[in-house]
Image (cartoon, rainbow, N blue to C red):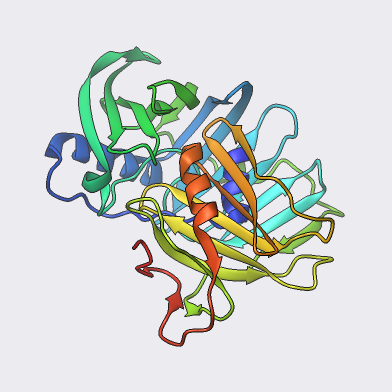
Amino acid sequence: MRRVFALAVAGLVTAAASGAEGTSPEPRQWLERMTESLASLQYDGLFIHSAGPQFETMRIVHRTENGRSVERLVSLDGSGREIVRTAEEVHFYMPDRRVVLVEPRSDDGSLLKALPAPGPRLDALYTLELRPGHRLLGRDVRVMDIHPRDAYRYGYRLWLDEATAMPLRSEVLDGHGQAVESIHFTQLQVGDQVDPRQLQPAIDATGFQWIRAGGRAEPRPVAAGWLPRRIPPGFRLVGSRTQAVRGVPIPMQHLIFSDGFASVSVFIEPASEKGPVPPESTSVGSANTYSTQVQGHVVTAVGEVPPETVREIATSLAPVEADPGLTAGPGSPVDR
């Protein structure tokens, strides 16, 4: 839940498309089946989400209505936070803060954002391996390993149900092959009709503060903005926006980088007048953050990528002068 909320608030984006040549078609077909099953099947399940030392039991309910998926994800431990995705919006219920965050819906996939999806640049960045596995939840499974071709991305291991290609278990792997984050279903019902009432939040939001986030980042001229001097291979700038922050007179700039598979958000804000702040890095499961000070601004990069990736992106950014021929937005070719 922590990770799904963080992704939504930061506006991280991913791309989904068909594979390219270079990978055996069978693993790619299984990955495509998994993506389709997550988006189109009716299912209700309990799973354990682990990130570093943190464990959380969660329930996910998914159904389709008029050709679109609707979904509810709820934490059964601690905070009791919930995410409800309607046909048009995503509602984040945070009872510990008495806040409901509302964002426009941006895709038709699943809220299980930790799982990879096929993309046009998949073969250039990863290799896929498929093999038989042991049974899980009484079901035969295939095990898929997704190996990154460099140190700037995590690897993945998926246990896919033979019958439906639903991921019964998934792990995010570091460069040593160790799991830094995982999802493991303990109960899963697939194919049964899901009662629409199960999609309603259990939280009474009476008296909560409702916050509506802005729409998707749009291309815009870069005026007194920031761009990277260098960037990890395969990553591109796919979104740029400014965000007003309460108590800060100058809007914060938000940049979104993606390789079509993993994403990194960068936030740039004026530094405090108290003096330079030393670089700082934090890690929770697969999520890493690196913050540093650059030319009177604090630059913070966060994403579900290895520490080296957020550090290189954060330290590569620099302010640029207005340039009518330079546009920051989806598809900007700045990975030079």
